[in-house]
Amino acid sequence: MGNDRNLPSHVGIIMDGNGRWATNRGLDRTHGHREGAAAVRRAVRTARAKGLRALTLYAFSEQNWGRPGSEVHALMGLLQDFLVAERDEILGNGIRLRAIGNTSRLPMLARSLLDGLVAASKDNQGMTLTLALSYGGQEEIVEACRQLAIRVSNKEIDVSDISVAAFRKEIPSLDVGEPDLIIRTGGDFRISNFLLFGAAYAELHFTDVLWPDFGEADIDEAIAAFQKRERRFGGVGGLHRPHHGA
Ligand code: IPE
Ligand code: IPE
Ligand code: MG
Image 1: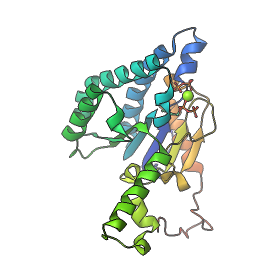
Image 2: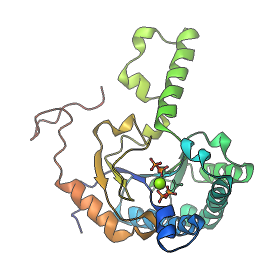
Image 3: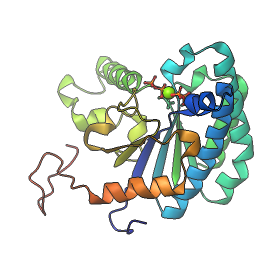
């Protein structure tokens, strides 16, 4: 158990390793995704109990659409089941649900369940749970460029108004602030197109634990590792914390 001081406010998780978890057991990859959904439930409960302000879960990337149709179909089914099963848990615990990514690509049922729960939970004051669905960090940055270009061409802003601060406002994943800590399960050391813009000064924590096995002790370990880091944001450390996010 880490102490509660210096708790990360916003944690992002790249939930990887479902397929390998299943393959290791001689099971179909879909079984791994089902166990992965149970791990999502656990992670949300744990994050809320620890008092995190925001949790962003990478559930499905824009690139994951390229997987076999049967796997994509199974994942969308699990998303629908999750949104039905967790409705009471989310609303009953003051969790605010959001989604980032190109959710218009989701099947109609998943999208309507998602939109309904996002709307029903929008005024909740507890932890913000963001699901990254059909999400890509590059895609999110390109869309921000497009939005700024539209505003320039409408003469709402000038080219000289384009700054990091202006750009940041067009990045939906940062509505809850920059991620302080990004965790990746499954043993690979990469970002795989998650929260690229916001990851600028995030602390990164990689673990070999496969996502379906990820539990409270693993979150504790990641938070404890975070609490030992010294974040300098390009400065010299100590008490002189430079202004962050121009
Ligand atoms: C993560 O597990 C879930 C999604 C990407 C949807 P994977 O399905 O990528 O599992 P591995 O990496 O193949 O083990
Ligand atoms: C990242 O995992 C995406 C999610 C966890 C949703 P991937 O399995 O898609 O990433 P790569 O292919 O290993 O980079
Ligand atoms: Mg993977």
